Image (cartoon, rainbow, N blue to C red; front, side):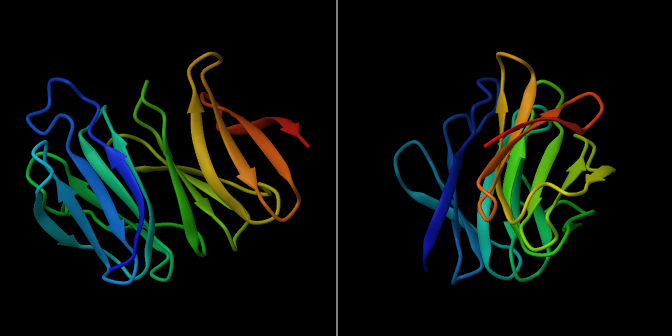
Amino acid sequence: SSPVALAVNSKSSSSKYGFVYVVCSVANILAVIDLALNVTTTIPVGIRPVAVAFNPVNLKVYVANLVSDNVSVIDAETFTEIVSSPLPSGQDPIGVGVNPVNGDIYIANSLANSITVYDSANSLVTTIPAVGQYPVSVTYNPANNSMYAVATDNNFVYQIETLTHTIVGTIA
């Protein structure tokens, strides 16, 4: 079923602490693995899921669905899709990153050359335009409270300021 990415529940107070979430791209599911290494459940998501991230602020799992142009949101405690899911994204979302301090979710929209940002309540915050050519990955740096995005077609890394959601640096 083509497992392509995984995330771990890193919230020690969660009843599912240490569980692993695996996106299976061809099967269009999120598989959940418990601490005994059993697949406890599979959850249907959008078409061609390719990335996943766990949010320790709201205990949700975010799955980027490449072909559906959206992000499925799964409750990490109940293994159910939340009511407001899926969240719209830009064209071909291929990466998801979470700011573990405030719970903001960053979605790399590869064909839109943008990043869509949602807050931990799953409300749209903004879309950051012109994030290079083909942004594919977003991650958090705790040393400077910044998000970083990689754009593969122009070989740049973009530093994103987390308060204003603006690009503040570019690294070749």
